[in-house]
Structures are given as structure tokens and as C-alpha cells.
Length: 228
Image (tube, one colour):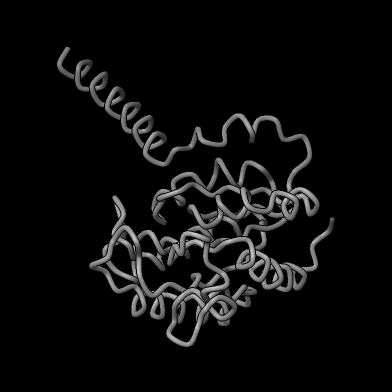
């Protein structure tokens, strides 16, 4: 009897934990959209609000290229890792573009405690993609010299450190990079004024910024030589 009760409690705990994990990762955010896909997307863009706003700002870029945007505002790398199978692998794309890390640096909830931990989460996403025959494009972080919702944090150092790790890892593993920092940064390491949203958000690009990012990411995607 005791053994039976233990088994029931263990299974219940496991199910609850799995359910809680799904809710935490917000895997249902794109569930309906994913279920309606009949043709696998050429590329999935995995990210946070920068990726989510990218799709909202320029849907034509995604639709005309058969790209799928899977950004969720506020998410840290651990949450993206938790929903990677649902929003990337299960869609069977040819490739994935990963742009992640600024929310960890901003100390959003459940953030990685070190740049190395952020980087490890990104590497884990790469490993999952490659093990499922999905090619990868890595992005450096978009330039940011301040974070509006975390004024006490100076992001420049961590952004530079994480970008260096991404660039080095990509070079060693022959992964193409869309260097978003290089195309968006001003002389002080912040987001160029002309690329900011009208409200002068210091983290999220406006449409001009996204257009510059599109040119950069398309160069990286073309090097993959994937079928249409």
C-alpha cells in the first residue's frame, strides 16, 4: 500500500511538473499556429520580444520567405530551450535563427546567473537543432547600452562578453553568424538612434533597424545553401 501511494504521488508530481514547465515556457503561445502549418517553414526564428516585434513590424519579410517567427516577449534562454522542440523541431524547418540573451542580462525572471550559463543554454539549442538535422544561424545580440526596465544594470559588458563567446563558438563549429551587434551599434555600443523605436526604447529596434537586421540575417541564411 505504501509503495502504491508513493508511485501515485511520484507520477502526479511528474505530471504536475511537466505541466508547470509547459506553462512556464509558454509552449501554448504558438500551439494553434503550429498545428495549422501544412508546409514546413524554411527557417524558424527563435527568440524573445525582439524577434516577436520583428514579425509584427515586418510580416512580409517572414511570409514571402516562408519563415516562421517564434519570439515571446520577456523570455530568457532557459524558457526558449524549454519550448525549442515545440516551436522549432516539431515544425521540421530547414534551419533556425537563434537570437537570445538580452533578457538574461536584464535579470528577467529565471535569468541565467552568468554569461557562461546564458551561452550554455544557446549551445544546448544548437545541439538540439543539429541532432534533428536542422541547420543553425547564430545571432550576436542587438546593441544596447541601457535597459529601460532595469536602469540599474549596465548591459554593455555582458553583451560584449556573450557576443564574443557566440562568435568564437560559431567559428569553431562552422556556424554562420548574423552579427546583429555590428549592424545596430553606435560608437558607444548602444542602439543607433535611427534604428530605435519612436519612443526611444534602448533595446528594441524600429522598422529601420529590422530592415538592417534582415539584410544581415539573409546573408547568413544564404550560406547554408538550403532548398526552398
